[in-house]
Length: 86
Image (spheres, rainbow, N blue to C red):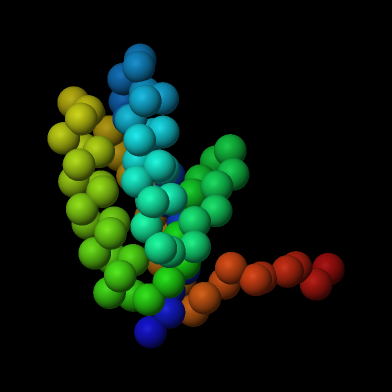
């Protein structure tokens, strides 16, 4: 089953950029399709592979920060080629 995931990692601390950069670099190092924009990161792929990667990388990122949150949206389909038609 293919899924599309949108993530926004938000460390609640002054020095937040290194944690976000490390998180995105770890996602990029996978063999999954990863796209970024200024507000979020999208990951596309097989459910088990995406969830396994996110479980590991979210835990590692949370261990590097004292307080933070992550917003996650999951869609059951591969939406990486989505083009608005309006």
